[in-house]
Amino acid sequence: MITVGRMPPIHPPQRMVPTTVKDPTHRKNESQPRKRMALLLFIIATGLGLLNFGIIHTDALASGRSRYNWKDPFVNEFTGAYSAVLLVPLMMWLWKKRPIHRNWATGIPLYLFAIVFFGATHTTLMHMTRLVLYPMIVGYPFDYGALPYRYLMEFQKQVLWIPGVFGLFAFIDQIRSSQHNKLMAARLQSRLAHTQLNQLTQQINPHFLFNSLNLISSKVYGDPDAADRLIGELADLLRDSLDLGKRPGIPLQEELGFLEKYLSIMIARFGNRILVERHIDPESLPTIVPSMILQPVIENSFKHRLESRLGSIRISISTRMVPQGLEIEILDAFTPAETAGHAYPDRSRPSGTGLSNIRERLQLTYGDQARLEAAPIDDDHFRTLIRLPLEFPPLCPDTY
Image (tube, rainbow, N blue to C red; front, side, top):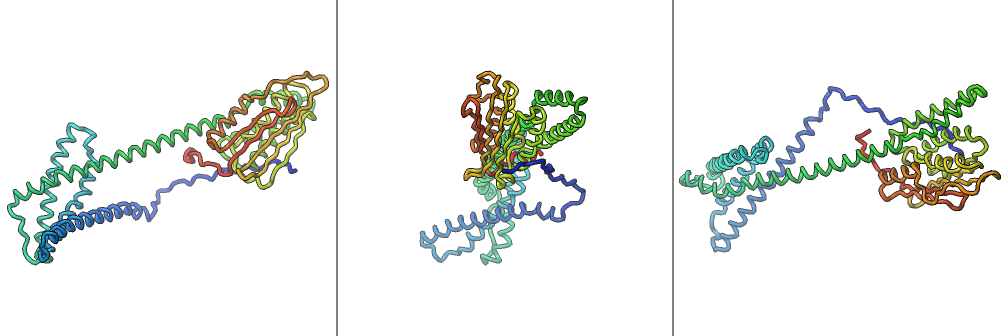
């Protein structure tokens, strides 16, 4: 059995102030996506060239033309593929600057013109590169025939693949937009959950403050030293509650330290009517738990026991590590005074604000991985059991 006393708060790391000095690797990091895009386009162009050449070559072999000059279709298909891929960055730039769906009235004429422009550019690139490569690779000059008809012939194929590329851009944008919306919705949900958690965590019972101030007031003249000590303890408790309320998870050791400060004030108020026993597993102390989750449970015991009936209460606080995670058990045993009444408020279905808040916080933090069990054992014994997983989930860290 050990008693956990006052623990120094762990302050979150300070944020670094950004400076105007740029990272020397900034430009290098920016160039990485461009290099990956260039490599991807090269691979696509090479694959298309090989595919088209393979179709023509196998067709020639199937037709019995095994001695035909295979270099001719080889140069044709690869110059066609590489010339088309060279236009993709420019087409991508146009899509980013003026996507067709931004304004259909101006977008449709613009993209009709773009199809003609990119088609003519593609044919021109193929013509120019073949004029250079044919004598070097094929062995004779390139003859494209009557160019006006050749431009028209190529355009019949370009009118299919150029709009197809723009359609691919639109499809990718749709996927990105959908993923972005899902991400923003998840972040919004996480922020809303954090807001709820903060509201639940930072709730300080006005009734507790009122009773504490009344207690201090009653001792100001009769016992000024005790009053001064209580003022310091109450100030420490309020300061810690503000600090812990900003941190969704803290080590169990800090949580127990905060609980000790609360208990010291309650013991000063009720005196020998309170006995607290602690059975703390040292291995459980580093476990991260939701901040300020135990104080409402203890407060619930005082509210339903000592404030409503005459008698004394023994509170046992136990922690233990289990295969599923961490278990925290709080058992209160009430001993009624001889002059006390027989019954006290029904707690068979705990619905007080404290326990309801804990349930909601556990659900928001862990989902279905944590549990809160709260039920009477008999008329004078009440048991609260909290089961928590070992891993504390990262709850939208960018909000801190």
